[in-house]
Length: 93
Image (cartoon, rainbow, N blue to C red; front, side, top):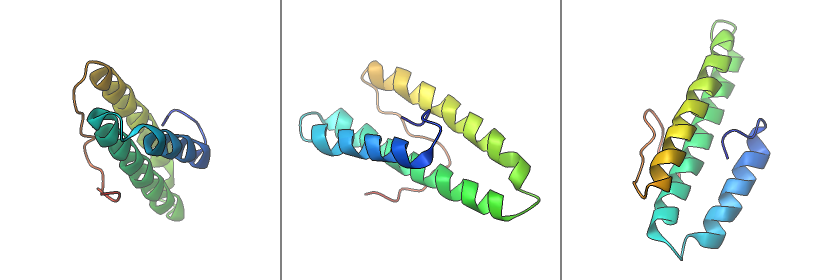
């Protein structure tokens, strides 16, 4: 869901799927929470970088890095593994 270019639709879709399916599978419970935390962390980092003139050029790098981590997480989750995104805040507990 991170690959959706706008933050809000991606977060809404991820949250809805997580709430709908989390009781059925512990892996979905865990990975959905992890995906929401990742999206919130990268959104907050983008806001901080965008607020500074020096950090603004790094926003594209941040989003590409996030997309790469998202693909890795999708592949590992498809194999039944739990994936932990590096460098994220655990906001949703």
